[in-house]
Amino acid sequence: MVFVRTVRSLAEARFKDISVEDLNYLESTLVRDVIPNLNPKARRLLNLASLALNVASIPSTLKPFSTLSIGDRRRWLERVNAESNLYNIIALLDVIVLATHMTNPRISSRIGYRREEAVGGVRVEPEPALSRSGKPRGAYDVIVVGSGAGGSVIAWELSRRGFKVALFEAGPEPSRDELVKLHPSLRALKYFWDSGLTFTWGNPVIHLPFGRVLGGTVTVNSGTMFRAPGRALNLWYKATGVNVDSGALERAYEIMERMLGVKQVPEHLLGGNAIVMRRGLRL
Image (cartoon, rainbow, N blue to C red; front, side, top):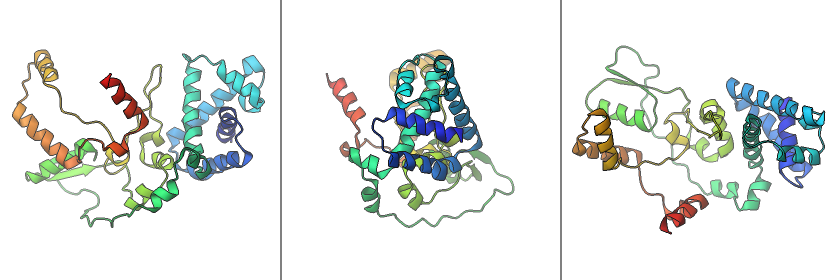
């Protein structure tokens, strides 16, 4: 399969001294876990990207990328123009290489990430007893599409006020046990739109992960939520003439923050990027 062969050859070029054992692990994980969980659109995209990479090396080397020696692959990759579409195609395949490579416990443990130990210590609470009626039937006052941060709170608020509400969600309902124990890389394939391969158009390409699961993106990803500054509200008022009741807006913020559990990120959860950003702000 061209996709598996290309990803393996790209991994050989990207990681110096990668062992045959780790390459075999990567290949088997692609076949066993990655490909079966790709939706048709993502599968077509990755097959086309693999084909494009293999063909792109032919004009300058007279060989497909996956048949070049490891050294020639590395030298050819270094010459790819960072402003080109080919660079973005390679970056897409790099994401798959890195995500799959990091599912290997031998690799992740080298950076101090021992997932088995971390997951083994997590106590999964029993599933809550929810009342579901299956497919909506009859007439409803309001249809809410999407069960994420916005849709869930809107549905709750309308229901609380006596409206008959149907909430639609395209994605599945995961178990708590699965959310904890399934590796993040594989979880993205299962619970993100287009298997996690959603990007902006442009240069550079920017990855935009959207949840396709009960609870929306907040089920599988965290985000930043802050109250709109007063100066922004004033600018909007000048542009549109719409005046927002600040008291009503504050009450709406309080409801959203309470329902979604919005809070400052604890110190122990701050990553390296956040720490560097904070240090820069203080200078």
